[in-house]
Image: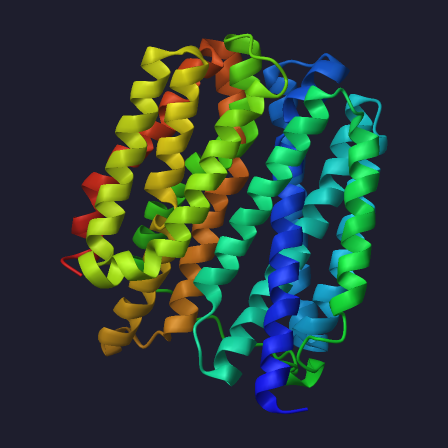
Length: 388
């Protein structure tokens, strides 16, 4: 088998992994409102349950990194994808709030283990093939979330149980993963021994870039977790209509990410970051003020358009800063890892925090927080990043 053929097969395998991850996320978000109504819990309780996913994610992040280094990312991608399918079924079986929280921890851990491993394998493929694939892979993730969101919304509208949906998705996961299991690069491609390294102080600039990412991540995460709940509880939308905000958000993310590299080449990363923040902040605030399902859809569409390229551009800028400022003695890969780790914090704490805040002031006005953070990111972008 030629190297070109192997790389093509690996690209297919990694693409499938990204689509699976996105589909699971999308189909889950489409049923969040159903979890709330079936268990008859408050926004705060749902926020706590979503926080359990964050706990699972934190558990999985470190585990996946260590296991990918020890065993190679390919075996971890394959095993964690099977585990993700099982976790989806576990979530579908829950019939109490306590069981839901426990299932969400398992679900979050499996989701993050697969996420880290597939991104690691994507980096290996880029390095060996000497081509850029990451933006396209993340677009495939967004396509997965869009497809999963549409499927979940349709099944919710037809009053198909969450368990039946979970079982159907799990079967698709297992079959897809089995078909591409031999397409990954050999485990030896990125195996390396784990050694204890002396802790190096990270340059402060990357902390600030990461905080910009937190602003974007909170909006992205909240769009998935709270769109359907806001539409259904506040504006009395039907089960299917309540999934439309997330579907429009996902569609905008797909289009933006597919166009992101070309837009960055034409206008520069800084204009994309500032322009994207303005679109997201002003659009979301306007949609919430106008209200109604139309206003929510407009707000979520604005988040998708505005933030589709922001986090990838921040990663790019972090690598560029590390590369150009040699006095920092910090590798671009380390810079990107630092910024992504900080930004991920927004995905973890944003949605649960907005749930608690939603019970205090109403979810409609709690969602103003991401809009304010988007504008704050715009104001801070140039002072942090300079004129890059």
